[in-house]
Image (tube, rainbow, N blue to C red; front, side, top):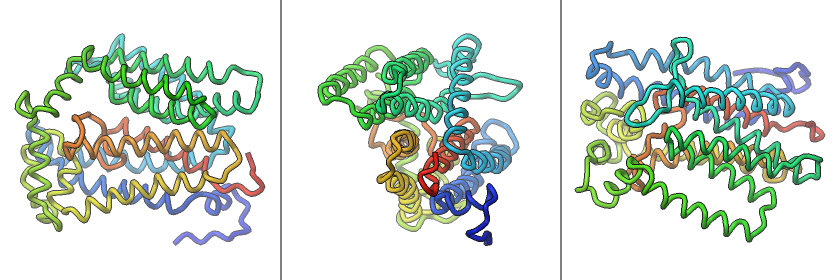
Length: 372
Protein backbone atom coordinates (compact mmCIF):
# COMPACT_ATOMS: atom_id res chain seq x y z
CA UNK A 1 0.00 0.00 0.00
CA UNK A 2 1.37 3.39 -1.01
CA UNK A 3 1.76 5.64 2.03
CA UNK A 4 1.98 9.31 1.00
CA UNK A 5 1.18 12.08 3.48
CA UNK A 6 -1.49 14.61 2.53
CA UNK A 7 0.94 17.48 3.12
CA UNK A 8 3.46 16.02 0.64
CA UNK A 9 3.93 18.81 -1.95
CA UNK A 10 6.07 16.82 -4.37
CA UNK A 11 4.75 16.11 -7.87
CA UNK A 12 4.04 12.48 -6.95
CA UNK A 13 2.50 13.47 -3.64
CA UNK A 14 0.09 15.98 -5.20
CA UNK A 15 -0.75 13.53 -7.97
CA UNK A 16 -1.61 10.74 -5.52
CA UNK A 17 -4.18 12.84 -3.67
CA UNK A 18 -5.58 14.55 -6.79
CA UNK A 19 -5.91 11.64 -9.23
CA UNK A 20 -8.96 9.38 -9.32
CA UNK A 21 -7.44 6.28 -7.76
CA UNK A 22 -10.62 4.23 -8.27
CA UNK A 23 -10.54 4.75 -12.03
CA UNK A 24 -6.82 4.04 -12.05
CA UNK A 25 -7.40 0.78 -10.18
CA UNK A 26 -10.22 -0.21 -12.57
CA UNK A 27 -7.99 0.30 -15.62
CA UNK A 28 -5.12 -1.65 -14.07
CA UNK A 29 -7.60 -4.45 -13.31
CA UNK A 30 -8.72 -4.52 -16.95
CA UNK A 31 -5.08 -4.65 -18.07
CA UNK A 32 -4.46 -7.57 -15.71
CA UNK A 33 -7.49 -9.41 -17.06
CA UNK A 34 -6.17 -8.73 -20.57
CA UNK A 35 -2.87 -10.46 -19.91
CA UNK A 36 -4.67 -13.38 -18.25
CA UNK A 37 -7.13 -13.83 -21.12
CA UNK A 38 -4.33 -13.56 -23.69
CA UNK A 39 -2.56 -16.38 -21.87
CA UNK A 40 -5.60 -18.62 -22.30
CA UNK A 41 -6.77 -17.46 -25.75
CA UNK A 42 -3.63 -16.91 -27.81
CA UNK A 43 -1.59 -20.17 -27.74
CA UNK A 44 -3.95 -21.94 -30.15
CA UNK A 45 -3.84 -18.92 -32.49
CA UNK A 46 -0.03 -18.91 -32.42
CA UNK A 47 0.14 -22.63 -33.10
CA UNK A 48 -2.15 -22.27 -36.14
CA UNK A 49 0.33 -19.84 -37.73
CA UNK A 50 3.32 -22.01 -36.80
CA UNK A 51 4.68 -19.69 -34.08
CA UNK A 52 5.71 -20.20 -30.48
CA UNK A 53 2.53 -20.84 -28.43
CA UNK A 54 3.48 -18.05 -26.00
CA UNK A 55 4.34 -15.50 -28.71
CA UNK A 56 1.31 -13.25 -28.19
CA UNK A 57 1.43 -13.66 -24.41
CA UNK A 58 5.02 -12.40 -24.27
CA UNK A 59 4.22 -9.50 -26.57
CA UNK A 60 1.18 -8.45 -24.54
CA UNK A 61 3.01 -8.81 -21.22
CA UNK A 62 5.95 -6.84 -22.62
CA UNK A 63 3.67 -4.02 -23.78
CA UNK A 64 1.39 -3.78 -20.75
CA UNK A 65 4.03 -2.41 -18.37
CA UNK A 66 5.21 0.40 -20.71
CA UNK A 67 1.55 1.20 -21.45
CA UNK A 68 0.72 1.60 -17.75
CA UNK A 69 3.89 3.67 -17.24
CA UNK A 70 2.80 5.91 -20.13
CA UNK A 71 -0.67 6.27 -18.61
CA UNK A 72 0.65 7.27 -15.18
CA UNK A 73 3.29 9.58 -16.68
CA UNK A 74 0.69 11.40 -18.79
CA UNK A 75 -1.64 11.70 -15.79
CA UNK A 76 1.10 13.69 -14.00
CA UNK A 77 0.86 16.52 -16.55
CA UNK A 78 -1.06 19.75 -16.05
CA UNK A 79 -3.77 20.89 -18.44
CA UNK A 80 -1.48 23.09 -20.53
CA UNK A 81 0.94 20.23 -21.14
CA UNK A 82 -1.95 17.86 -21.91
CA UNK A 83 -2.99 20.24 -24.69
CA UNK A 84 0.58 20.40 -26.00
CA UNK A 85 0.89 16.62 -25.93
CA UNK A 86 -2.39 16.19 -27.80
CA UNK A 87 -1.47 18.74 -30.47
CA UNK A 88 1.94 17.15 -31.02
CA UNK A 89 0.47 13.64 -31.10
CA UNK A 90 -2.22 14.70 -33.56
CA UNK A 91 0.32 16.28 -35.89
CA UNK A 92 2.40 13.10 -35.90
CA UNK A 93 -0.73 11.00 -36.41
CA UNK A 94 -1.85 12.98 -39.47
CA UNK A 95 1.58 12.47 -41.03
CA UNK A 96 1.41 8.76 -40.24
CA UNK A 97 -2.07 8.50 -41.76
CA UNK A 98 -0.82 10.12 -44.96
CA UNK A 99 2.22 7.82 -44.98
CA UNK A 100 -0.05 4.81 -44.42
CA UNK A 101 -2.09 5.63 -47.51
CA UNK A 102 1.10 6.04 -49.54
CA UNK A 103 3.30 3.23 -48.19
CA UNK A 104 1.13 1.02 -45.95
CA UNK A 105 0.46 -2.61 -46.72
CA UNK A 106 -3.02 -3.55 -47.91
CA UNK A 107 -4.61 -6.23 -45.75
CA UNK A 108 -8.08 -7.60 -46.55
CA UNK A 109 -8.80 -4.66 -48.84
CA UNK A 110 -7.81 -1.94 -46.34
CA UNK A 111 -4.62 0.05 -45.81
CA UNK A 112 -4.48 0.77 -42.07
CA UNK A 113 -1.02 -0.31 -40.97
CA UNK A 114 2.46 1.07 -41.53
CA UNK A 115 5.85 -0.18 -40.42
CA UNK A 116 8.05 2.40 -38.67
CA UNK A 117 11.51 1.23 -37.64
CA UNK A 118 10.40 -2.39 -37.75
CA UNK A 119 7.35 -1.68 -35.57
CA UNK A 120 3.88 -1.99 -37.10
CA UNK A 121 1.58 0.91 -36.16
CA UNK A 122 -2.10 1.61 -36.73
CA UNK A 123 -2.19 5.45 -36.72
CA UNK A 124 -5.99 5.66 -36.55
CA UNK A 125 -5.85 4.38 -32.96
CA UNK A 126 -3.63 7.31 -31.92
CA UNK A 127 -5.84 9.83 -33.70
CA UNK A 128 -8.86 9.35 -31.43
CA UNK A 129 -7.55 10.50 -28.01
CA UNK A 130 -5.48 13.28 -29.58
CA UNK A 131 -8.47 14.56 -31.55
CA UNK A 132 -10.73 14.52 -28.47
CA UNK A 133 -8.41 16.88 -26.57
CA UNK A 134 -7.54 19.17 -29.51
CA UNK A 135 -11.18 19.52 -30.57
CA UNK A 136 -12.12 20.31 -26.95
CA UNK A 137 -9.47 23.06 -26.98
CA UNK A 138 -10.95 24.64 -30.11
CA UNK A 139 -14.57 24.31 -29.00
CA UNK A 140 -13.93 25.76 -25.54
CA UNK A 141 -11.85 28.64 -26.89
CA UNK A 142 -14.58 29.65 -29.33
CA UNK A 143 -17.38 29.21 -26.78
CA UNK A 144 -15.55 31.39 -24.24
CA UNK A 145 -15.09 34.20 -26.76
CA UNK A 146 -11.40 33.85 -27.54
CA UNK A 147 -10.29 35.43 -30.80
CA UNK A 148 -9.95 32.22 -32.82
CA UNK A 149 -12.47 30.47 -35.13
CA UNK A 150 -12.70 27.45 -32.83
CA UNK A 151 -15.80 25.87 -34.35
CA UNK A 152 -14.37 26.17 -37.85
CA UNK A 153 -10.99 24.77 -36.80
CA UNK A 154 -12.57 21.83 -34.98
CA UNK A 155 -14.82 21.12 -37.97
CA UNK A 156 -11.95 21.38 -40.43
CA UNK A 157 -9.79 19.05 -38.35
CA UNK A 158 -12.65 16.57 -38.12
CA UNK A 159 -13.14 16.58 -41.89
CA UNK A 160 -9.41 16.05 -42.53
CA UNK A 161 -9.24 13.05 -40.20
CA UNK A 162 -12.55 11.66 -41.43
CA UNK A 163 -11.34 11.80 -45.03
CA UNK A 164 -8.06 10.08 -44.18
CA UNK A 165 -9.90 7.31 -42.32
CA UNK A 166 -12.43 6.71 -45.09
CA UNK A 167 -9.65 6.54 -47.67
CA UNK A 168 -8.11 3.54 -45.85
CA UNK A 169 -11.10 2.65 -45.52
CA UNK A 170 -11.88 2.36 -41.79
CA UNK A 171 -15.57 3.08 -41.29
CA UNK A 172 -15.55 1.90 -37.66
CA UNK A 173 -12.87 4.35 -36.53
CA UNK A 174 -14.57 7.08 -38.58
CA UNK A 175 -17.78 6.35 -36.67
CA UNK A 176 -16.05 6.68 -33.28
CA UNK A 177 -14.34 9.91 -34.38
CA UNK A 178 -17.70 11.30 -35.54
CA UNK A 179 -19.31 10.40 -32.21
CA UNK A 180 -16.58 12.28 -30.33
CA UNK A 181 -16.93 15.37 -32.52
CA UNK A 182 -20.72 15.43 -32.48
CA UNK A 183 -20.92 14.99 -28.67
CA UNK A 184 -18.41 17.76 -28.00
CA UNK A 185 -20.09 20.07 -30.52
CA UNK A 186 -23.46 19.44 -28.84
CA UNK A 187 -22.09 20.17 -25.34
CA UNK A 188 -20.36 23.32 -26.59
CA UNK A 189 -23.74 24.82 -27.52
CA UNK A 190 -24.72 23.39 -30.88
CA UNK A 191 -28.04 24.95 -32.02
CA UNK A 192 -30.94 22.48 -32.22
CA UNK A 193 -31.36 23.16 -35.94
CA UNK A 194 -27.81 21.99 -36.56
CA UNK A 195 -28.42 18.95 -34.34
CA UNK A 196 -31.24 17.88 -36.67
CA UNK A 197 -29.21 18.67 -39.80
CA UNK A 198 -26.19 16.70 -38.55
CA UNK A 199 -28.41 13.79 -37.51
CA UNK A 200 -29.85 13.63 -41.03
CA UNK A 201 -26.36 13.85 -42.55
CA UNK A 202 -25.18 11.05 -40.27
CA UNK A 203 -28.03 8.77 -41.35
CA UNK A 204 -27.34 9.56 -45.01
CA UNK A 205 -23.65 8.90 -44.41
CA UNK A 206 -24.36 5.45 -42.97
CA UNK A 207 -26.63 4.63 -45.90
CA UNK A 208 -23.94 5.83 -48.33
CA UNK A 209 -21.31 3.66 -46.60
CA UNK A 210 -23.46 0.62 -47.35
CA UNK A 211 -23.33 1.34 -51.08
CA UNK A 212 -19.78 2.76 -51.31
CA UNK A 213 -17.81 0.22 -49.25
CA UNK A 214 -18.28 -3.45 -50.22
CA UNK A 215 -17.03 -4.78 -46.87
CA UNK A 216 -19.63 -2.68 -45.02
CA UNK A 217 -22.37 -3.98 -47.30
CA UNK A 218 -21.19 -7.54 -46.79
CA UNK A 219 -21.17 -7.27 -42.99
CA UNK A 220 -24.62 -5.68 -42.83
CA UNK A 221 -26.05 -8.28 -45.25
CA UNK A 222 -24.59 -11.11 -43.19
CA UNK A 223 -25.97 -9.58 -40.00
CA UNK A 224 -29.48 -9.22 -41.44
CA UNK A 225 -29.37 -12.57 -43.25
CA UNK A 226 -26.81 -15.01 -41.75
CA UNK A 227 -27.30 -17.36 -44.70
CA UNK A 228 -26.02 -14.74 -47.15
CA UNK A 229 -22.34 -15.12 -46.25
CA UNK A 230 -19.64 -16.35 -43.90
CA UNK A 231 -20.49 -15.78 -40.20
CA UNK A 232 -18.01 -18.30 -38.88
CA UNK A 233 -16.43 -16.18 -36.13
CA UNK A 234 -19.75 -14.88 -34.82
CA UNK A 235 -21.21 -18.40 -34.77
CA UNK A 236 -18.15 -19.68 -32.91
CA UNK A 237 -18.40 -16.82 -30.42
CA UNK A 238 -22.05 -17.58 -29.70
CA UNK A 239 -21.19 -21.24 -29.23
CA UNK A 240 -18.49 -20.23 -26.74
CA UNK A 241 -20.99 -18.25 -24.65
CA UNK A 242 -23.40 -21.21 -24.70
CA UNK A 243 -20.66 -23.59 -23.58
CA UNK A 244 -19.58 -21.30 -20.74
CA UNK A 245 -22.98 -20.78 -19.19
CA UNK A 246 -23.01 -18.91 -15.89
CA UNK A 247 -19.79 -20.17 -14.28
CA UNK A 248 -17.69 -21.18 -17.31
CA UNK A 249 -15.86 -24.36 -18.20
CA UNK A 250 -12.77 -23.37 -16.22
CA UNK A 251 -9.47 -21.60 -17.04
CA UNK A 252 -7.85 -23.15 -20.10
CA UNK A 253 -10.72 -25.61 -20.61
CA UNK A 254 -12.44 -23.81 -23.47
CA UNK A 255 -12.49 -25.51 -26.87
CA UNK A 256 -13.95 -22.88 -29.20
CA UNK A 257 -10.76 -20.80 -29.01
CA UNK A 258 -8.99 -23.59 -30.91
CA UNK A 259 -10.97 -22.68 -34.03
CA UNK A 260 -11.59 -18.94 -33.43
CA UNK A 261 -9.09 -16.96 -35.57
CA UNK A 262 -9.40 -13.71 -33.58
CA UNK A 263 -9.99 -15.25 -30.18
CA UNK A 264 -7.08 -13.31 -28.69
CA UNK A 265 -8.09 -10.01 -30.32
CA UNK A 266 -11.54 -8.82 -31.41
CA UNK A 267 -13.36 -11.88 -29.98
CA UNK A 268 -11.54 -12.21 -26.67
CA UNK A 269 -14.81 -11.70 -24.77
CA UNK A 270 -16.04 -14.99 -26.25
CA UNK A 271 -13.05 -16.81 -24.71
CA UNK A 272 -13.80 -15.12 -21.38
CA UNK A 273 -17.43 -16.20 -21.67
CA UNK A 274 -16.60 -19.84 -22.34
CA UNK A 275 -13.88 -20.31 -19.73
CA UNK A 276 -15.07 -17.96 -16.97
CA UNK A 277 -18.79 -17.70 -17.63
CA UNK A 278 -21.50 -15.07 -17.62
CA UNK A 279 -20.68 -13.66 -14.20
CA UNK A 280 -17.11 -12.82 -15.21
CA UNK A 281 -18.33 -11.17 -18.41
CA UNK A 282 -20.77 -9.08 -16.36
CA UNK A 283 -17.87 -8.08 -14.13
CA UNK A 284 -15.97 -6.86 -17.20
CA UNK A 285 -19.02 -4.91 -18.41
CA UNK A 286 -19.40 -3.45 -14.92
CA UNK A 287 -15.79 -2.22 -14.89
CA UNK A 288 -16.23 -0.47 -18.24
CA UNK A 289 -19.48 1.12 -17.04
CA UNK A 290 -17.79 2.18 -13.79
CA UNK A 291 -14.94 3.95 -15.61
CA UNK A 292 -17.32 5.82 -17.93
CA UNK A 293 -19.91 6.80 -15.31
CA UNK A 294 -17.33 7.79 -12.71
CA UNK A 295 -15.54 9.90 -15.30
CA UNK A 296 -18.74 11.76 -16.13
CA UNK A 297 -19.51 12.19 -12.43
CA UNK A 298 -16.10 13.79 -11.78
CA UNK A 299 -16.61 16.46 -14.46
CA UNK A 300 -20.32 17.02 -13.86
CA UNK A 301 -19.83 20.08 -11.67
CA UNK A 302 -16.64 21.43 -13.23
CA UNK A 303 -16.79 25.03 -14.41
CA UNK A 304 -13.94 24.58 -16.91
CA UNK A 305 -15.48 23.96 -20.34
CA UNK A 306 -12.26 22.49 -21.72
CA UNK A 307 -12.16 19.89 -18.92
CA UNK A 308 -15.81 18.94 -19.53
CA UNK A 309 -15.42 18.64 -23.32
CA UNK A 310 -12.05 16.84 -23.30
CA UNK A 311 -13.10 14.34 -20.62
CA UNK A 312 -16.40 13.71 -22.42
CA UNK A 313 -14.62 13.06 -25.73
CA UNK A 314 -12.19 10.61 -24.13
CA UNK A 315 -14.98 8.81 -22.27
CA UNK A 316 -17.12 8.56 -25.41
CA UNK A 317 -14.18 6.99 -27.25
CA UNK A 318 -13.45 4.52 -24.45
CA UNK A 319 -17.06 3.55 -23.78
CA UNK A 320 -18.15 3.39 -27.42
CA UNK A 321 -15.18 1.24 -28.41
CA UNK A 322 -15.97 -1.24 -25.64
CA UNK A 323 -19.66 -1.21 -26.54
CA UNK A 324 -19.04 -1.82 -30.26
CA UNK A 325 -16.67 -4.72 -29.57
CA UNK A 326 -18.99 -6.44 -27.09
CA UNK A 327 -22.09 -5.90 -29.23
CA UNK A 328 -20.27 -7.33 -32.29
CA UNK A 329 -19.15 -10.38 -30.34
CA UNK A 330 -22.72 -10.98 -29.11
CA UNK A 331 -24.10 -10.55 -32.66
CA UNK A 332 -26.16 -7.51 -31.63
CA UNK A 333 -24.68 -5.38 -34.43
CA UNK A 334 -22.72 -6.16 -37.63
CA UNK A 335 -19.17 -7.27 -36.91
CA UNK A 336 -16.49 -4.58 -36.68
CA UNK A 337 -12.79 -5.12 -36.15
CA UNK A 338 -12.42 -3.01 -33.01
CA UNK A 339 -10.43 -4.02 -29.95
CA UNK A 340 -11.88 -4.39 -26.46
CA UNK A 341 -10.00 -1.72 -24.42
CA UNK A 342 -7.08 -3.14 -22.41
CA UNK A 343 -8.30 -6.73 -22.92
CA UNK A 344 -7.71 -7.46 -26.60
CA UNK A 345 -4.25 -8.18 -27.93
CA UNK A 346 -2.83 -5.25 -29.93
CA UNK A 347 0.08 -2.86 -29.48
CA UNK A 348 -1.24 0.28 -31.21
CA UNK A 349 -4.60 0.04 -29.47
CA UNK A 350 -3.03 -0.56 -26.06
CA UNK A 351 -0.63 2.40 -26.28
CA UNK A 352 -3.35 4.69 -27.67
CA UNK A 353 -5.73 3.71 -24.87
CA UNK A 354 -3.00 4.25 -22.29
CA UNK A 355 -2.43 7.76 -23.67
CA UNK A 356 -6.15 8.48 -23.69
CA UNK A 357 -6.77 7.23 -20.16
CA UNK A 358 -3.65 9.06 -18.95
CA UNK A 359 -5.10 12.27 -20.40
CA UNK A 360 -8.44 11.52 -18.75
CA UNK A 361 -6.81 10.95 -15.35
CA UNK A 362 -4.85 14.20 -15.73
CA UNK A 363 -7.89 16.19 -16.82
CA UNK A 364 -10.14 14.89 -14.04
CA UNK A 365 -7.63 15.41 -11.23
CA UNK A 366 -9.06 17.36 -8.30
CA UNK A 367 -6.89 20.45 -8.36
CA UNK A 368 -7.24 22.80 -5.36
CA UNK A 369 -8.62 26.23 -6.15
CA UNK A 370 -9.53 25.29 -9.73
CA UNK A 371 -5.86 25.20 -10.80
CA UNK A 372 -5.64 25.22 -14.60
